[in-house]
Length: 266
Image 1 (tube, rainbow, N blue to C red):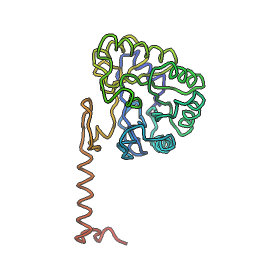
Image 2: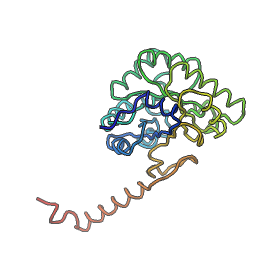
Image 3: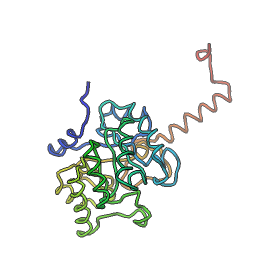
Image 4: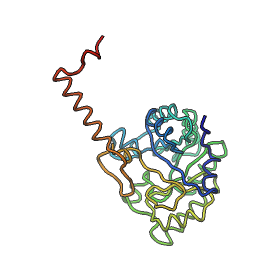
């Protein structure tokens, strides 16, 4: 049996200068395929709000919905480390609510949680979570849950001063106990600088080649989500076209009487 990826495994990847991979999943069998393919961390991203549920933004998904998807993904994974992206307002109202909601995701089968931001309040949340044994992945740079405050999808850390501010926040998260930090939409040079000055691994989400890992939304990778493809995403397949063609052929076969045939009836 393949050895389970743990927090210790992920930290060792950095110390050994070994890259690792992260992809999102929202259902049991996608998670199973990712796990079997060797993906190291399977993330139940709040991106499911848009790519799975059809909302306009990630802030629309709630804790109950994230719980359903967490349970589904956890059932499909044997080796990978499973992380639930904590949705908007699930950890913002109080530290106590944060512990309760994050703890529920662990009960549902997640191995850790991801939360956005680097404010003093977020640091206090991370300190409490790690103190009670809940592994936390941080998230800095562009933070989608702060979209309205940031004023849109804007690259973060474009100057030395801005990169230093992200690094300062990252060091606070590191001290609070995170096992890794996502850097989203940060210039490659800034992400390299930040990565080299941290002991915990960084995960690039559009932050270039010098982070310790890469993360993408699986629907972008598979070519399933047609509405928008980020500049930093790479399309490895065309599931949208495959699903359309299969459904169309089935529709044609039903209406022409070609399905079912002799081998498909009792």
